[in-house]
Length: 210
Image (cartoon, rainbow, N blue to C red):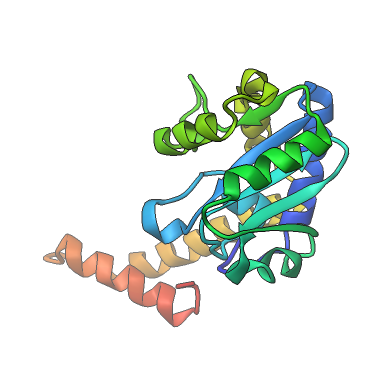
């Protein structure tokens, strides 16, 4: 997906809902945060795109609810994806209370979060966010309902939709085109840096930098 491209998000969210049903996961929670600050959760772009949200939560259920718990300044952003159509606004200090209110209404028997023992790409929940979450869910039944989202995230990343396959093929074709240009550029005495700069210039000249 290119920057701010949501074209694959609706299909990936539908795929996630289908996988949740097959895996017996009632709800799935992903932290939203500015991807440029610390990388964010690996799975975040798949279900939201690459447009940053400030601190917030994305809550998906096997029944199809798509709930974004976001700061008021971001309230207009989730509906703009065409996917996250239920927006719950927090003021910064009450995000945990808003989450508990949503979970109390939904009553999930299992709540998947993004930690994993085997797959690093399914291990996007930071330790700090995990501690925040356990504090927020203290004295609620949902703390005991937390489960790993490893199987869900692994399958969501691994099962490519037709749109994803098309992008992969386009990326391969673009790479082959760049390599062909490099073959014509190579000559004795070139430094690795010169080759690197040439490749970046070719990418930029084709408008692929973004």
